[in-house]
Length: 367
Image 1: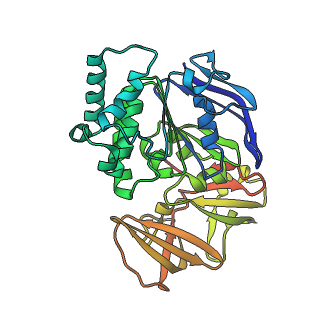
Image 2 (image 1 turned 90 degrees about the vertical axis):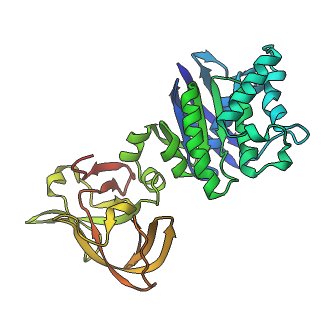
Image 3 (image 1 turned 60 degrees about the horizontal axis):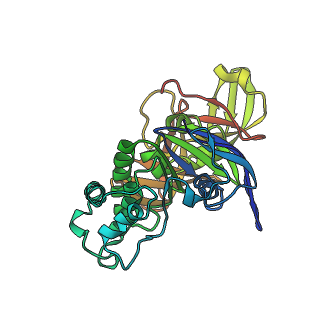
């Protein structure tokens, strides 16, 4: 059991926010609702936890219909993007507050035990007597998370809880949340526009665009087999490179031609290529500046921008009118305008239909 959403629809004055969304979240799952701002992920999160009512459809907790039950009457916990804490209460009292007002009557000793145990998990023991204005941004957000965890509810909802933190704090809290929430059990639903959040924490991912749930499933399945171009392009870090291509049928075999320099032989998959135009996807880390095996395709590109990201380097390249991103797992420095020979592995491609933008085939020989 867990949470089930059935045919959820929701519209606002600006238009439809959710269009016939259905999904099942099993006990023990950490589900990330992923998508850009306005895609519908936060609206679904708010409907699942009871803050919003759907225009149509139903929500079930453990097979019980809770669609008409307001959030105040559900045993849920919510963590928001903003650092929502009570400024007049200490960190200790902030964490204890939901237990003190709960319909379940907790003994003072039990409240104290839960507060201190949760504070210990989140590294807040040393600041329990401080007020929110006296602690750092990371500690403020940890306090909000601790307050949710102290309730000991089965269902926890988090709406972009790391958005207002700096890069280092985001990394720290990702690891902490994955460990703590994984140990807790129950159901966690987490809304974010950040693919890295989903990749680093989730067991399952749902990708939203324009109010539609384009794909939902196990993290590895969605990442390894993105069903539509939009899913593949967004659910990658950095973004997946998407290149238009035409099918060329020659006596020697079947090819997809991306440019004069880039032709990919796909003769073994010819029976699955029934259209004339396709979109070819390749992840940034599957482009290289050297050949690692036979059969790799080389082409010339010009460096437009180089960005160092810790121990990695992102190269932004142009090839004719196309733009590519290459991820190098080392620090390299090339001057802007440098001509670079790029090697593409033809056994690491996603082929999508240009008409319906759905996945036609993967050329991966092994996973």
